[in-house]
Length: 200
Image (tube, rainbow, N blue to C red; front, side, top):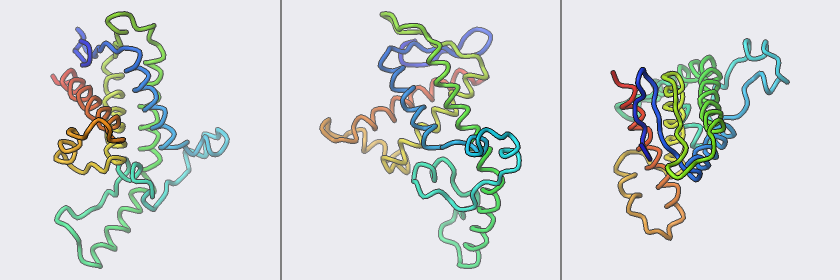
């Protein structure tokens, strides 16, 4: 079990994590929540009606991490569109973003918070590590958060495809990006084994 998720009888997943691993995942989840930012209710002093009637932004975020987490919905997969098509795509993306981004942000915040709370509920890690046991619902929240963490780190490392991550894997130890690369790869391993526990 150390270092990877295993299925639990009846559903859910378990993984043994040591104190350093717990600290890393918790810290990354907190940073993710800070990057995503507060929701409309928090910005309006906790008014739930503000969240209900708030429209999201219409422009893509300037931060590359947020652009990776909240990409434009309408993008031509074939490459650069003609000027008129590009303008239509921008308009459709802006409209889609306005009505969906707040909910998407809330979901990502909730997933990150679920990770933090489940780690905070662990006892001290013993010799074999503390065993984190997740219900099926908690497993899905963890899966979403692990995916978001990898997207965020990948954006900071400017990873656009698997070839980039393969090249980064061979960085010399003195390269300042090395710790982020190792975290990216380690989270990928956790994500992959968690996916396998959710498969029927």
